[in-house]
Length: 328
Image 1 (cartoon, rainbow, N blue to C red):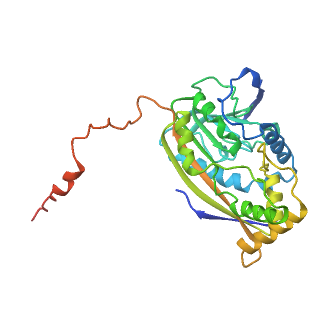
Image 2 (cartoon, helix red, strand yellow; image 1 turned 135 degrees about the vertical axis):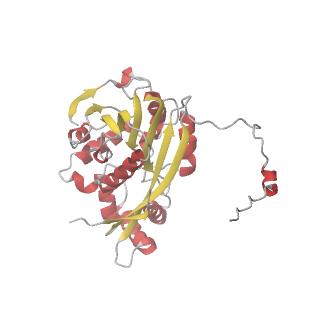
Image 3 (cartoon, rainbow, N blue to C red; image 1 turned 30 degrees about the vertical axis):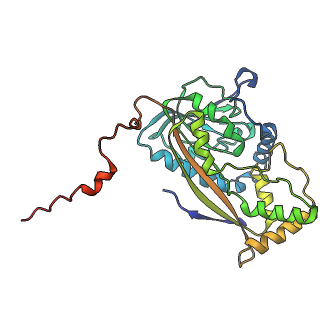
């Protein structure tokens, strides 16, 4: 029996053939920058989480977000001949797609355990074991790239742009800056009170104000970004931490602190219930989900008019008289 329920705070509008392993050294990186996340630790976390006998009980957030990403694919009025699903997990997005929108699909994940647990879908598909930052595909390969991302995957945006064909679409979701704010605040207050300072125990998240800049900086155009919130209710902080670990979503930042004292956890649990607790004794955990759509530039796409090319002034709008209604 599940010990939680999900509340949507804001609503939103084939067979596997083979597993291929490519050497990372043969692929160029995704560009220079600050290395925030430990990719090997994230792979180990996902391998461990997917090996659990009851792993499906902890995939409720990815299942919901995957369905909402698929909804956005149906909003695009075209059929994509070849698509790529990054970090596919158990094919959370592909399960909601049909050949009417995607004719063929490549599924990739950094965890071999995740790929071994894929569900059979109605779209012809292939599995590829690959790191999102080192995609083993040629340039201009896919018409569509999909993903239910993690924060550690954000540096892979240039790789996504590279493998997309011109006029190809990138549709994805990732946790936003307000995700788990209740947990983060409770841990910070408790650790400051018990230990005289605090260190991050939750991976850093991307703010919605930065997402457009990241997409634009990677070369995408015609950007669309919107937010959604999922609120999950737990009996207490221990159940939340246990579920996050079983999701494979433990902190993987390089500056993470591996030890959390027992007194600090107990204090955080008390702060959590006092500040955010529900009348029935449960505590909420908010997942702020950012959805993004970006297109690889192509000559056929609409472009803004050149600056100064307008032939009508906004100042003349008040001079326009309404058209007199016709009289019978």
